[in-house]
Image (cartoon, rainbow, N blue to C red):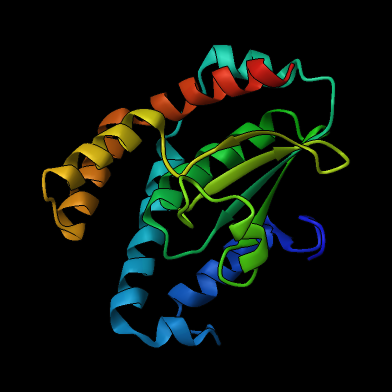
Length: 195
């Protein structure tokens, strides 16, 4: 199967790959579909906008800066993932707080099915799936595929018969209202659990 590190790329490499898809220069046949290419382009724009507005709260900053062990944030995702467009800017910010001890790496879900299948969420290949690992790749905490409050809302919307398009629209509106507060609350709990 290989290690998480062997199956991952740096966040910078992921962003370069993402940009090549957006620019229509990717060799990945999945993005030959106009629907998925347009959706991925929209995700790229969402990620850029959300990242420029994201602000780290002081409590999480203090927890991250006080870490005394090296951690790797492995995010299993794909550029077409709508939830990742909002999660990745936050994860990047978290890693940048303590770059000597925290590293963000990306695992492509579709290129690493064995990794994804070992980290399912309620039996589903839901992404983004985030794994916080120590130096020996022991998993200390997991998060995903979306902030806890939104996850509960999505379950509610789907049980009420919302279509995929309705769910996506409502989730995007929720992310824009929340501005990253809930992911930070989730991460405060997570970081406290590994200290």
